[in-house]
Length: 527
Image (cartoon, rainbow, N blue to C red; front, side):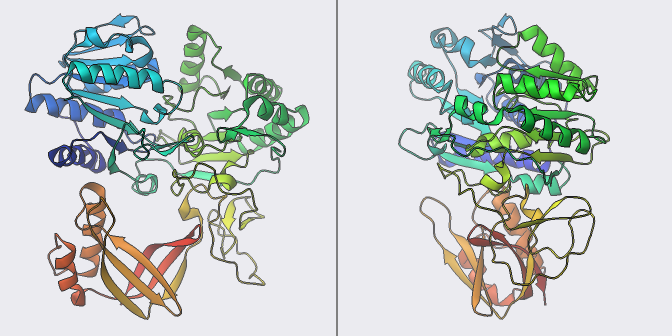
């Protein structure tokens, strides 16, 4: 059976080949929620064993749903695959399988039973920094010793950062050494592989003033005490019911177990079918609730800290955030539950009562290097009086209903619209270009790139064209070059590009979008 791969999935596998051809580290593959990490894992495994028949592969993750999902993705692509499962939750211990899908909680003490292993693939790799991190590290250390230091480890995640120490491949205690491939969530949305997420202004906002922090995150007990207030819950639920009238599947993230149950009860009072899932929910009950939700028999599920990763309900078309967080990863994972495609689903509405979008900015522009998120100041936005959609303050027309805003009295400073869920929901502006400069740009440890600088009056804006990179950055560079020089072959090096730079078409104007204190070039109007 042939495995049909999307272009970015094929590029992810090829990027791993390129990485291991010239490196000895442990790379990461970064793919947004819903873009098919399990398909990439299946394709990589099948090709690895086709090339080297005795390759032994171990696929690790932390929840039984992901173990089963990854296992089934391989069998769909390769029905006769020599694969097995090692998981107490799934009641299977196929320890001798050539391809073994395992739960870290079940297998972490059994490295010497696993014995020979060539390749370890870790799904939801961002968890190696909290919780199960000790299990992973001790198990992998033993497994590497057993295999004479030849073990290769690949991590897969949608969020390559963690709250306590930043990017997964940086820092002295890191397990992963590089990012081999990174596909942008905005690109997959614009290409139709993911559903857009749409923000709406909420009148109700949770007050976290006075809530302390520990380890860079709100203290859980204090947070729940601050937000679990009956009058606030009822007001938020009223808005959820109002905005969710035309939506089929609602997923609500809450700030604690009691809070999740109180929100559930308030939703039920409106005649909406709703259940709660927490870490204390018995497995059979949890499985039944989630199965009913995915099948559309249950309208709403509230949860506390359990459905942020490893949960796949494509029909989810409304997400309510009643869980404030300082964690960039948690924020992106929560919003990502709504990006999967489903029949009859055009987009996912996100109601952020928790101030997370203002705290962190668009999900495609978050900075995982920051241990502490940006300030809590007001974002430069305005709300459409016709449809309540959040727009960047510079928008002339509503991005949703085309309502015309009155002209602003003063010019708004170029800064991020941190209440937008996607950067394209910030209004870009066109600037006339007077001059263009090309130069070689060096970054330690990375291939050089072509720096293109545009002079727009007294201001300069730059972009970087990664001609010598591999995978997706190279694909973007090829597209850039072909638009600027359709009659010239795409150069393979920066030096070659500089030699041909005089033949490049010069933009009359560029379109820029504010991203924090910088700008991103999103389009060019070629002369």
